[in-house]
Length: 355
Ligand code: NAD
Image 1 (spheres, rainbow, N blue to C red):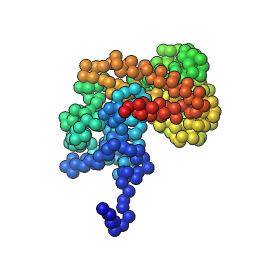
Image 2: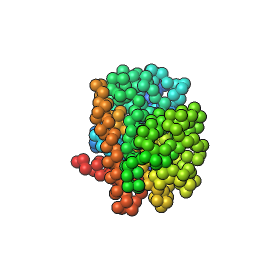
Image 3: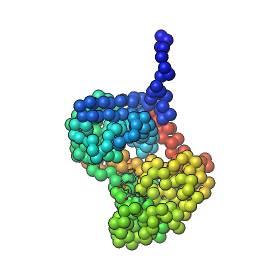
Image 4: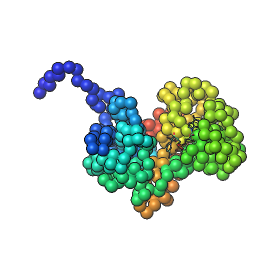
């Protein structure tokens, strides 16, 4: 049948730049609660698509769609690389979490998640609290990180995974994972950054710390005998390892030429502003630990926690991040390519192995 349009058709999700053969994209509305959400199921080859729900006052629905498509694809790679039998998905709710969030809104979201029959499993992300997830759980079983299914705050596992990955990087560059006397610049001393400092301090590393929140800096200085620097100097200081644990985009055209360390290994998401910045790091001889590989401890804890706990399985999988990182570094060196490209390739290989 030949469909006639009186004016050029509006592009759909299929024509979107970030569309990558997503299996399902659900546009969810509930007038009564005011819910407007997009749930993107990118790939369920390895299992149901696990990915958090983000509540954000997106300036436009188009930007919300961009985020849902991009982040759900990212979860496919992250879950595959972490060795989880889970696919990738993400949900975004267009709302201001400080003003618009109500139990009714969260329940309406839960109803839509339930309609996806378990192909998407939701969890907390930016703007969503454990209480919100309890409201979602009233309408669907397909939710993780609630009191009934979780180990609580995933940050300690994220920090543990980053610590293990950082040691793998040290072993690759310095020939030993022993951190005694190694100088590590930790930027951002929040949930993950502070816990990472604890591990590093116990391992005998010498800490250089920074945060925009002064009390966080003072706490780290007194707990770990750390040296404080300004946040904007964190990447520049004379250190062996730079660990970004605050913001994304810290590795960019301005910072990469100034980095003083031989290794960049930290928890922040989306550390590379562009793919060229990864290439530039490699050219400078700096080993970059791909963020989504090294910071997977949190998603591992959300995925593998059970009503009974599941802490042992979570720890084991989190500790295995070290092996994944070593495999990435060795292959990157052999192929003379940036580690983030190799990480993507290893994730794709796991996806392609499934019939
Ligand atoms: P958080 O909000 O608890 O801590 C972030 C810290 O960074 C805060 O102390 C904040 O004051 C500080 N900060 C903000 N801007 C800064 C700047 N310009 N310079 C220096 N410090 C700055 O967050 P978190 O849970 O510790 O997460 C840290 C990073 O790791 C984020 O990028 C997050 O997306 C990523 N991450 C976290 C987890 C997790 O389990 N929490 C999992 C994966 C990735």
